[in-house]
Length: 158
Picture 1: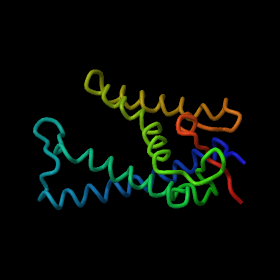
Picture 2 (picture 1 turned 30 degrees about the horizontal axis):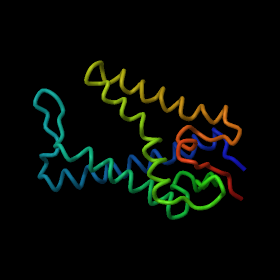
Picture 3 (picture 1 turned 90 degrees about the vertical axis):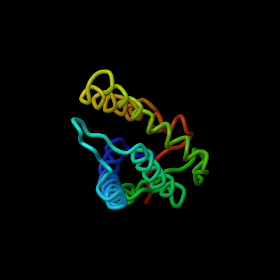
Picture 4 (picture 1 turned 180 degrees about the vertical axis):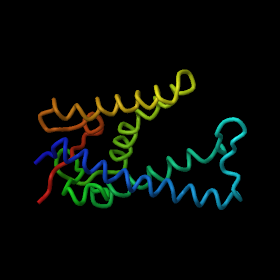
């Protein structure tokens, strides 16, 4: 049975806590490894060039490992949701990467902060993700836009 939007959003909210913990842990390790030189605040906050790509890589590894191992992130488990291919099988690596990039694509809108403001960029990302998930309300199999692109679906188990 396809997962409903409220269940998906609740699972996403749970995953937010895992993401915060991962980002905080990587940040702490990097701060220790650089002797406290990870972030400079000479008039504006600036991080070393490799910090954001590292955070992205670690978060990507979390989602990819979760989807490939059992089709569930930490947030999906209590809500009894599983990510599967359209035929119900386990995802392959390429399909998981496509879903990851499609789901993360709205983050590219953060670049709007360079032209406008951080608030405008954050609102743009939020609106884009709202559109991504609103797709479930129109799709007969309740698939979000990134699921349509990747050929996946989130189902309710048990």
